[in-house]
Image (cartoon, rainbow, N blue to C red; front, side):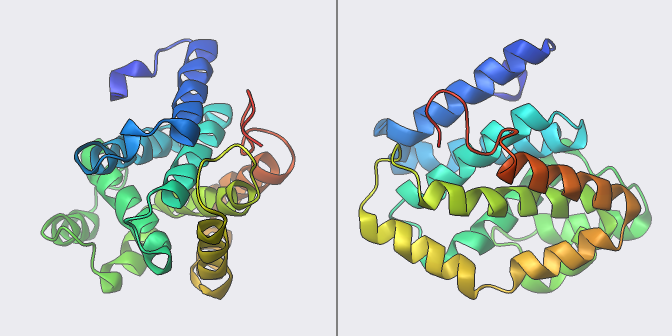
Amino acid sequence: FAINNLLNDDEEQYFVSNCVHLSCQKQMDILEPSVLSDTAQQIATLHLAAVRSNSWSVAGQLSAALATLTIRALDWPASQVIDLIEHLAVQGAIYLGLSSHTPSAAAVAAAAAASNNTRPEILPTLFALEPSLAVAVLHVLTALPVACTSRHIAAPPIRFSAVLDALKSSQTPMHLMWLVLSTPEARTAAGRTIDNSYGGGGGGGGGGGG
């Protein structure tokens, strides 16, 4: 997968993102250690780009793809999947370039880029500076419960339960919701996120992604 694979035509964008989602559900080679991390990072970056451009049908497929990977990647401890989703989104923002070009945003981005593991104390500031980033993470988190009840994802039953339990016990979704509700542009995007995830707009995934 590559950024350039998302073409300019909306239908082509959706087709490619749907193929990514379906590949994440069943393919075994995508779980190889040499493939998994890079694939997850590219999907997270593409997803953030789709959120920023309000391409919600594409974002819905990519959030479902990323949620699927977090379930199938058994090497990723279930207790850490939310932290991983946040980290992937932050690295995607650094790759795409922050939409906020203030000195504080640049300093936070530099601090985040300095470590392979995004430091927790950086996240609140970075999310506040980059509302689209908080919305992107929230979008993937709202796709997780759907993925955890899917019959189309090849993973052991105990893994679904473990990821769902981690999500239930986390304070991150509520924190992100309050954060985006405090920002007008993020508030609008968050509403679309919830509508698309639970209203059939893209989170479940066409072509057998439910």
